[in-house]
Image (cartoon, rainbow, N blue to C red; front, side):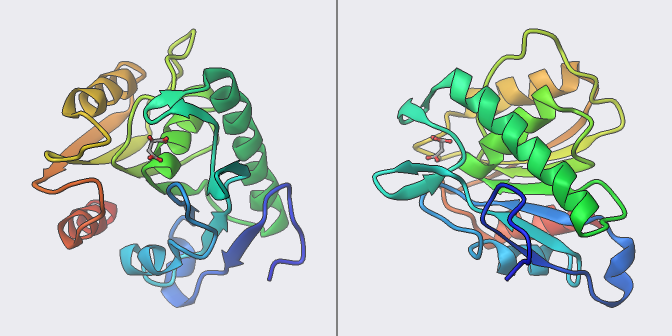
Length: 206
Ligand code: MLT
């Protein structure tokens, strides 16, 4: 258990061995998940990397999320904005509290991917990069952020009943317009994460 809360219930696992030189991973779960869910995924993607994993503070029928939605795929944009800033502040506080050497790379699934995209668009200085599985456009920022030098992996699925392909392509364009280097990979699957997603994200992370 962490000694400090930093504004979010969370788990933090320090880096081990050679992975101390790798950036920490910020793990962001999907709807109904929690701060423990993605720890095995983080360990699989970059074995031994430091893992920082908060629990979303919004409850939808008892299920934790990172922001409010009005219906599936219809977001409460003011809440998205406020929660993205809150999460960005948590990341900065954690960087200080745990003496993280580098900006974290976000690894988000579904709702976690969407809040990570919102942090990229509203607080472009906070994350070192991102792996976004099944993401959508969380909001259109009033001004395009400066994401030059930031690399983003988008893991989308051709048969995803939650995220239409055009939505991921719209996010790709939004991030590219901001200067990010984006890799969009498709799997022939549904909304759930598959071994093929994990393999290609792992290879992309290097
Ligand atoms: C969201 O609400 O962020 C997306 O619809 C994905 C989900 O969590 O179901």
